[in-house]
Image (cartoon, rainbow, N blue to C red; front, side, top):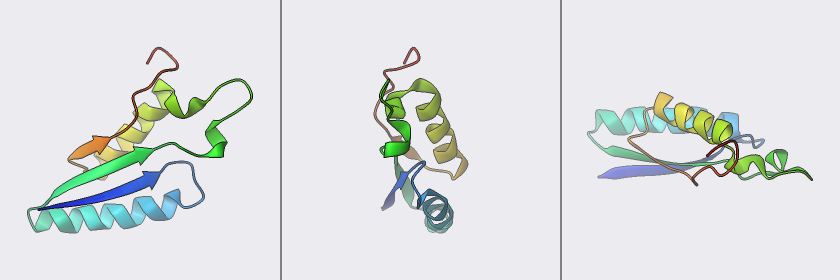
Length: 85
């Protein structure tokens, strides 16, 4: 009925994850399946001494955009808290 996957955007594996999941979602749609993406920004690159940017509106928006680009039907993500989120 559905295929789900997680991408950790900004991680060292994110390029591979985006490519593999994009292909899997394309194939799932050909089979008439729903696709669900967990789009997470949890990695040390987004955390500084000043703030934890994994909950910033601009970064979460970019992750949502990439999820839509790879044709995720449902995107699960933590709601933004920074940058007016």
